[in-house]
Structure formats: structure tokens, C-alpha cells
Length: 130
Image (cartoon, rainbow, N blue to C red; front, side, top):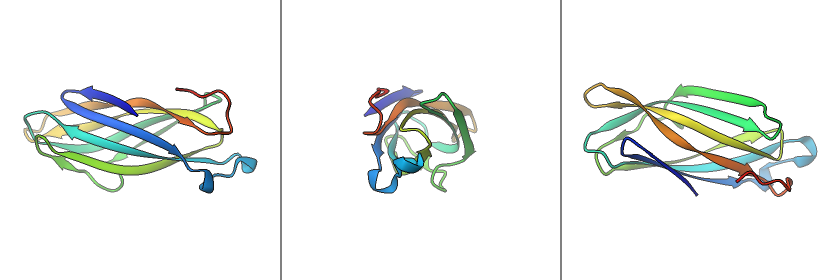
């Protein structure tokens, strides 16, 4: 499990290789990841945008930006958390993901929360990235 705290917002990530949905013979590897976002600050915040940097084992970088996560822009009051599961494919048997969430406070201030870098490891790659 990977964890990072930015401005009293904790992001925890756990990734899982999806063997049954992957096809190594076709260079198609798929992972799911579960994320928990916990607001330990004293103000209400909303997740506005996400920005992912996904790097495969060959160093190819893919960036994914957009509003919210899994179709939602959750509002977190102090002490609340939000969990979601998503996934990503790669053409290589391993990689790494890292990113940021753009948050907005109830006062209208925008700030970034870091998503910890986490590895995407499959049993088809002897060089594990963690």
C-alpha cells in the first residue's frame, strides 16, 4: 500500500494485477487500483480534477487529465473520506503511476493534493518496480 499526505489530505493507493483480464501474448496487461482520499483538515473540500502520469516499463509516458474521478467530484467534509476503484492498461508487464488531484475549498481556494507513486507489477516481469 502507498500513502501520501498533502495539506492534511491523505491519499492511500493499492494496486492489483488483473490476470484474468490481461493477455500477455498480445502485450495487454491490466491493473485495478483502489484509492482512499481522507480529509483530515478543518475545512470542506471538493475534488475538481485529476492528473495522472502513467509510465510503462519502456519509459513511455501517458498523461490522463479530466474532471473528477469515476464520474464524480466528491465533496469531503472534515473527517470524511471517499473510496473508489479504477483501472489502467499497459502494453508492458510493469509500470508506475503518479498524479495529483486539484481540490477546491469551500472558500474557493484551489490546491493540489499529491497521489503517491505506485507500481504496476505483473507476474510476467521479473524486474518488479517497488
